[in-house]
Length: 152
Image (cartoon, rainbow, N blue to C red):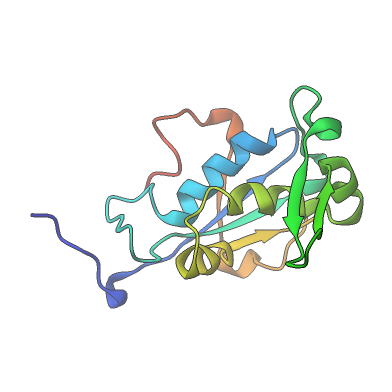
């Protein structure tokens, strides 16, 4: 029988990722695993035991192929005929970090738990961020492989 984690046993740490020349989808998978807590041995599916992730240099992120111009994001206003569509190119002009946030959001569970976990993602343009006091551990995407993602 497996042992479940309790609220007082949760320990969150901070990670920092440089998004320079990173592909959106691959970066989003790494981030979503850390935010959910799947990189820990204490992973509990119904608890928020993930870690915080700070992403910097979001303006230097990349898409593969022609997805930057051709991919479509849809949302609905709730009114009849209220479907809206946009491309990553248009979204990137207004809010560069929103492209990555949407990719990570869609990899998290729906509902209250997913919304709470998404608040652990911090996205910044440029090399500076206000979370240096938390001493985030730096994750280098070039050195990652599929077996070792920010393992403690």
